[in-house]
Image (cartoon, rainbow, N blue to C red; front, side, top):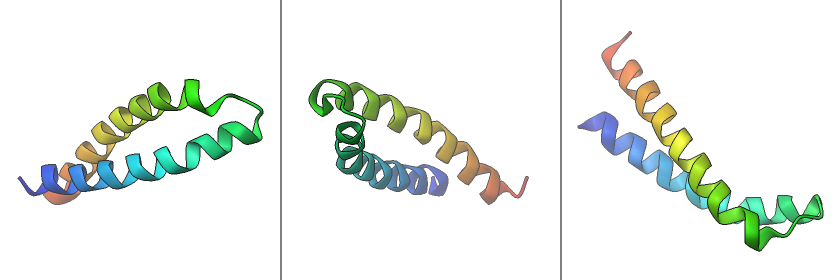
Length: 63
């Protein structure tokens, strides 16, 4: 239960930061931030969520 709660908190914080920062990064590279940011943020948050969950679970279990 603890690993799920911690990973959910990490995913929410990371997703919010990505959603804030990524449009500015795309603008620097002369890309349209409106079209690319939403699918990219969702995919990155999903991948990071799995990584966070397994990393936190591994740390809690002491493996």
